[in-house]
Amino acid sequence: MQEIVTGLLMAFDVVALYLLAPHVKSKFLLAFWTAALHTLFPLIGFQFGEWMHQFIANWANTISCLLIFFVGLQLLLSPKNKDFPAIPMPVLAILSSIDTFSVSLSFGMLSLQKYLFVISAGVGTFILSYISLYVAQKTTLFQGHVLKWIAGATLIIISIISI
Image 1 (cartoon, rainbow, N blue to C red):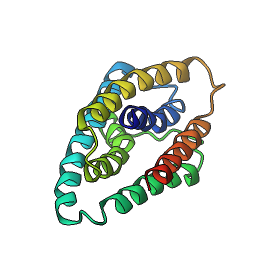
Image 2: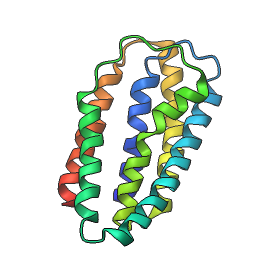
Image 3: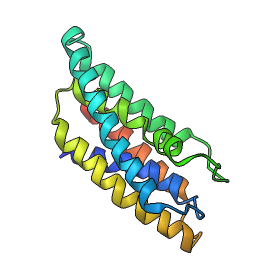
């Protein structure tokens, strides 16, 4: 269950970012790119995490909890995005997906279920990013920083519970 919840939480920072993007023309393509990278980075992270677990088995739980904690802290402390930058879609998808690597690295070190997290992160990100891009075009009522705060606080809670 932890893998599914965290996979979905990893999509919230993308939602927070994409709610600030009212003028994206290829919403489906950007959502697809982001979902694909939210699947690829965790697979790579899990492999590194499993490899690292063999070498630092005694420290794996502590290191993984610290990584998850600091990703959550970064989400809490990151500045509010006021203007959406003009960045090419593949670069935007990469930048919004890179944090899934460190979370999946942590899960790999904890030997948790890889495919539950990867599928949850990929599918959840696709659906939520497409919806947020659509909503951003229609309204400015939603503030992305609130979702980033919720995701960050939840990751910190998960890291504390895991210790």
